[in-house]
Length: 136
Image (cartoon, rainbow, N blue to C red; front, side, top):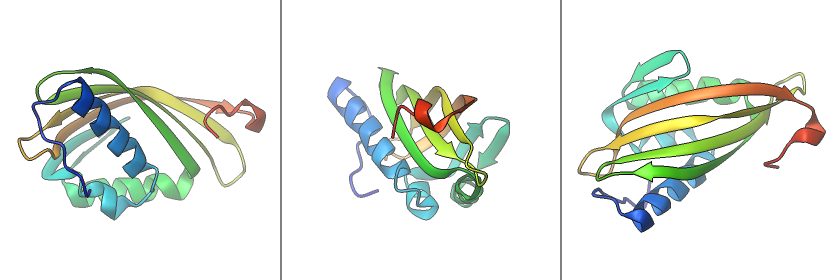
């Protein structure tokens, strides 16, 4: 991640941090994305718990093998000194052509260096028709 925004956050820096995260995730580059997280970062992603950059990169590689043409949108919900909560939604299709719309909330906690130490994601998902896509 080129630009590193460090806590404590204010409204402007929290919103910018969320936009940087959205842009980074939309690259779908697991190695690049993992660099935004602390070496020992801990994640809860649906029912999967991972720790560390390598595990994060592996989770993302698996994710995007099945979530094709993934497109994400994040919106700032609330922030504090070193925490940010976002609402998000994303769409993708699987290898059969079935489209999905996923949405939920993430809670992030950052270290003094601006790297994310924890990510807790609650995700819901619906199968949709291609004409119901709202992000593409």
